[in-house]
Amino acid sequence: MKKHLLNIIRKTNDVDKSQFDYVLSQNEKNFSAANDIFNTFLSKVTEKDISFYPNTTNLKNRLAKLYLVEPKNLVLTPGSDIGIKTVFEAFDLKGKNVVTTDYCFPMYDVYSQIYEAELKKVPYEGMRMEISKLIDSIDANTAFVILANPNSPLGDSYEIEDIRPLLKTGVPVIIDEAYREFTPGTKYSSFISEFNNLIVLKTLSKGYGAAGLRIGSIITNEVNIKYFESLRFMYEISSLSTLYAECMLDEIERLKADIHKVMKLKERILDSLKNSDYITIDTDCSWFFLKKTDKLEKLFKRFKVDIRELTLPKLEGNWYKFNVDLILTNSPLLNELTSNSFQ
Image (cartoon, rainbow, N blue to C red; front, side, top):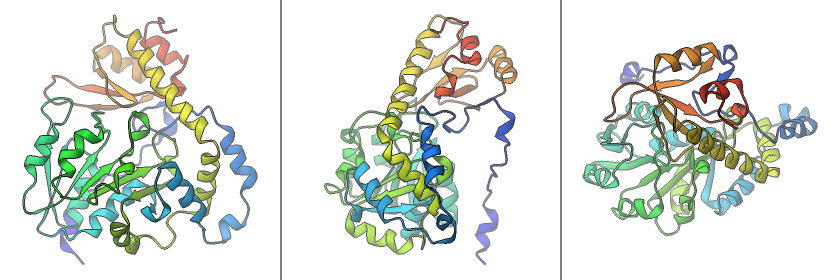
């Protein structure tokens, strides 16, 4: 076996989230205005969805339409996490480097170790990455650049004009759009015909609230797709996930409306906190940061809130990453946080 695999440290996701009343740690969707999607799914599921192998052709076609590309430009993956792994596997990485940001999705580090690449992390000087610094980190041994847009946990995002200089280097650029539904602007998948070095990763996990389905996509030009097709799973996702995703796509406008409501709710929460004792920092995505205080710590403990605590670049103290979800609407937690001034 490959001895270097023994040096890779993996974290397990063993937190029992049923012990919390508010799960705000991983941008999972606690509430949907379109809950009848689940009932529609239950009415359509049959025993064959268990006993037969899945047929994902229709879902693939519908996702391509959603992302404004042709089906030939898309490969399904079991979540965008496996999409990321597939990208790493497709490149000859031994002795090469991969450029990304520091902060980044932890699995970039894991896959770099698995495939024996150096992960070159470009540090943040503030709450937004300077694309020029990524470009300056590219050298003759760079296999590709991978950039989450928006990035988690900092929540900074970039339009195509921001990224164009990076794409013009000719180095393969992987744009991880796990949270893109929360930000306005043109989706990067629209530019795969213009840049043959552009690879886009998508998922239904975050904005559309289907993390448990594990449905992701790799989007790029036909030449690149041939490489990723050779690595795809024989059956990319289960029949049950396929059926549920199709039920979601039947109600896609309602799900988009949910996303809009989340972003409006975040605006209202931040506005209500302007004159409070709390220190906040906004982001381009569906969360904001609250500077940790003893009062907040006690509040989140009392209301059984699962929330992420972290440090931010060039800023003192610890911060809570407060993910906004519609379950917070008119909730006791929100009323308490805003001193009952939230309307």
